Length: 242
Image (tube, rainbow, N blue to C red; front, side):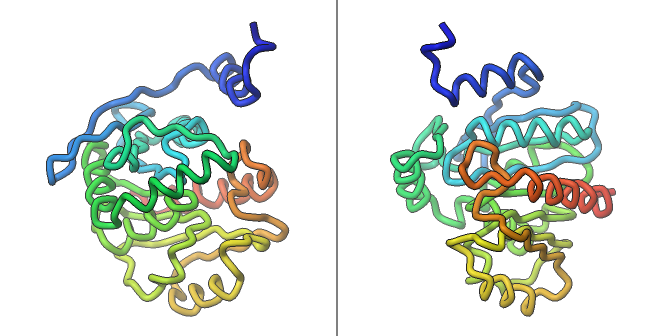
């Protein structure tokens, strides 16, 4: 039977066999009455929580995997389905067709609505001290979580392409950023501009790493860069989330 499975499904199967299903899906209601699904994992009695924000590919296997990794560190984690306002149940891969769908869905969700859902997700955690971490589109939204809400004690933004255009916004918590040196969509001139605008932020650039270097399901996966960035992210949250 396994020979008939796609490589993506095989990867999911191996993950489930090794680690089990750590989390579950819940429903969250935003302040405007919108209901959306969210993947949650981690100990119910955790005092520190994390909101994990998706790329343009939905709350897919990679995002659930990252949520589980943070949950294994003792955090209560929630990964909100940011596309639910446009289409429910989005779970995309990384091929060109899925990318096209993700870009189209991204265009249907406003920043205002995204912030409302991020805020609702943070409140749903029920923990005393919360952080936010996001990837790609989620990296930009994690930045907005720091600048446009007061829900978070720390924000880690991985290769957020929209940060440069909003670099002058004032964060309400400590911020850390991770960028790939060879990212074709985020030039180093943008990263330098961000550094100049946000001198108090931790901004890291990973040599030879491209966009999406932290996802082991992308061609741009860079295990060395991911390991270092993940260690820095965990240390950052450990320092700032009390």
